[in-house]
Image (cartoon, rainbow, N blue to C red; front, side):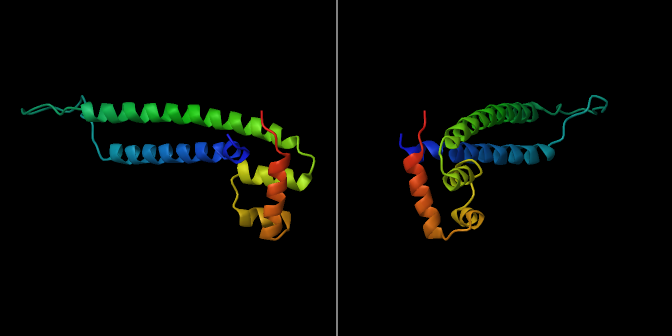
Length: 136
């Protein structure tokens, strides 16, 4: 695994979590449209409504929520480890750049603005930071 691939893991993890959160939102919205049969209702013949679909959706929502929690813990653990590894770099600008890019997922334009450098200089700092970065 290259240094860039290692550093980008957090971005990929966050992207996967967002995708699952979108799925969770979609399932929740679909669930709002369904109505469960209340026990207090009196039936006047005909078949009893089957609430199996609602139960399946609720089970799926619970499963996705649990997966998101696990992935968030994994992301936070990775970010904490990455933060410690970045802190080993001596140059302040390089540390700031790597944290902003790979922990906070800022764009190159946002990072250049924060550092007060041009895009070209920001990329030079990034290249130097990659050279100085060591991961375990």
